[in-house]
Image (cartoon, rainbow, N blue to C red; front, side, top):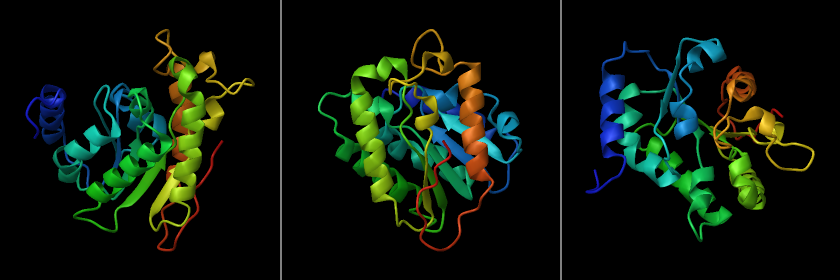
Length: 213
């Protein structure tokens, strides 16, 4: 753990809570930032008891990679869903190519002890607060699709398109008053997109990204 890690206290609490939760054998772990942290009804919304949501607020892809060993590995997931990336674009100078590289780092970290771990990467989720970065979000999503087009056991799920309005920006009806996080309707839509993807197990051949929007 790096000295001065701003997430240390939150990650420590999260790790302790997960350790004290009844063990789910080989779960599906949804791993991400505050969108995941606030999704307290993930298993209910997805209609399956084998889902564990693991998120901490403000996390960027490098933060998720750094804490993966501590938060994800002990759960021994059979499938990992990565839900992050938009926060990274708030860092000055971060490019879509940086997003792709960071997602690959997280995938490699998660698979360090289990090279066969199935991974779903969600496209970067838009939000009204990200309006100035919408073009970069779309470029990053296209770059992720191209990067993982022939990856074995890694699928890209489109959780962006369904949230866009006719103007190409995030549709406010899906978001809370802070213009960053989803409201109840937004989580219901997000859950439908994920549930459709989770119905299908990854096969052992190279796959093209799945789109559900």
